[in-house]
Image 1 (cartoon, rainbow, N blue to C red):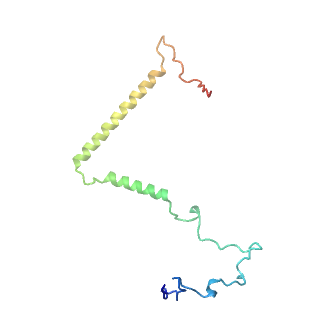
Image 2 (image 1 turned 90 degrees about the vertical axis):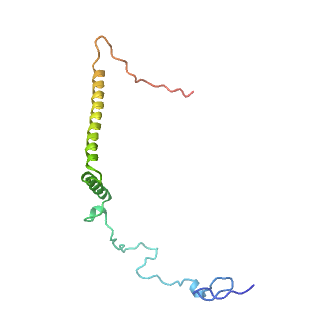
Image 3 (image 1 turned 120 degrees about the vertical axis):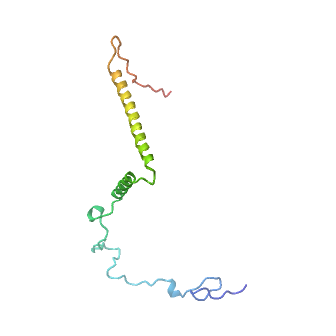
Length: 142
């Protein structure tokens, strides 16, 4: 089997395709801990450095997604309301008339529903009130 040569910039190969390092580089140096690092035996008396992060309520002019979306929707609706979208004037005349007719049709439905409610509440002469449809429900698990 042929021996492989050096690999990349890591240095010479150990023969199986892997670069080798010196024993000093493989084993981390152990020594005394820095004075500012706790040893784990005693709790640290130092306070952690203060984070630059602040809560939304504590920052002036903080970004608020909800108000940003609301502002965008209001702006879009205003743009659509005041823009002709390149459509001819006749379209808008008929669209307004169709909107008015749709609202009148909805009002007719609401008026009819109100009349039906009024008729149900006033009992006819000689009629007695219908018994309630609600009652007890028994369930047999047997």
